[in-house]
Image 1 (spheres, rainbow, N blue to C red):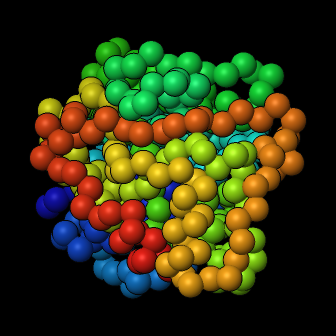
Image 2: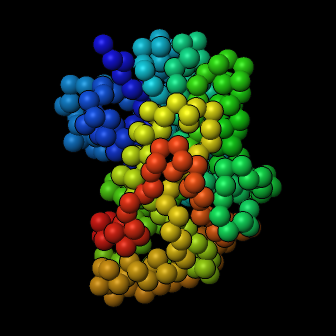
Image 3: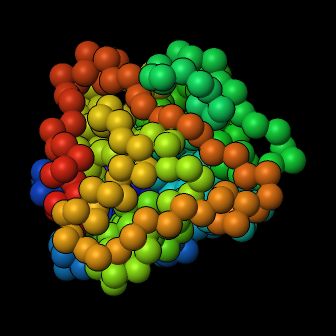
Length: 316
């Protein structure tokens, strides 16, 4: 009998899409989620699926977690603090969630050497000024006096810890650095820019662009992200690797706002908001965030298939 796949954070935005994809592919799935940022509503399409088991709670507080992991064939660890606003407003929660829950799942998976895919983030590239980010780049994190960098630092420590478990305990780990995943079920609740813009455009309210709007990002549809994760699960060569997952089509945030207004035929205007008004004094942002995707493509023969225009149209 095939062992189930364990998905932490499976009721979240990306996690819920991954759960649906796994179930559609014939897998059985166990979800752990404390619903702090996720929602049971995200899993309503598969709520009655016989292959789905849901455990509500923090990963670190699940009873018999080691046994649960040993009964699993693979683990996707997506549970984490999400969103710039949450990071800025709740730095203790951010650090504790990212470090404690990752340590718990690695400790529990190690005895049976159950493969773990750790979802990291493009934030770990920090203040790098390179036009394109490669997985073997040096990383430049801002000072601890600016809490905005606590998320990047905690996720980078997750990466170090996962690779340490691989070296010392033989735990098969794969690390993916996700770049701005967007799509259905993502909300602007924690500062995510595209759903925030779309909500404002629909309501005819100003689209608030932080900073000068010249910062660039690359947006990847969640279906493309999930497809990459599923393929990496099936790729032995991905074990021990750090891999960028995202789209590499850049857009300035100012242009993104203009495109959303155009696609929704909205009467909204664009409003530039200084960072110190949006967040706090001394806030620093990443000027550019574009991934190099050669490693992803060489490992699984995959590139994201949805353009930014298609993403905006689908989200609108």
